[in-house]
Amino acid sequence: MFDSISAEPIHTPVYTPPFRITVRGEEGRVRIVLSGELDLHTAPELELAVADAYRGERSELELDLRDVRFIDSTGIRALLVSADEAEARGVSLQIVPSTSPHVTSVFELTCMLEALPWSDRSLD
Image (cartoon, rainbow, N blue to C red; front, top):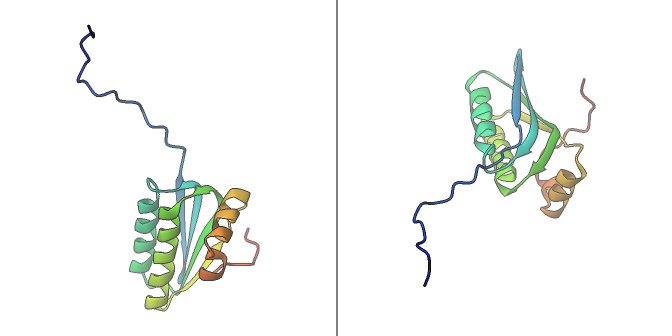
């Protein structure tokens, strides 16, 4: 015969790697610096930061992805929505690419290198 099976669900803690957003505002310009993983769990934070940036009188928005180590489709969607919103508001958006080969390959495979407004300048 079988032993009784517990109906209690097993709860396994989910590891969430560190993710950080730093917002730097200047006259007419906002720079949002991201580090960590931009995914299903963290993309809403980016969307909120971008929405806050659009509330002010900003003519330029920069998203710095240099320290992003992973991105999924939710993160890509957040970037596309940010780009669409910038265009609708007449805001100049520039995205500084990640230094991670993994993130770069995701952008290549999804044709985002042509679809998003990438910055080619070096930042301090």
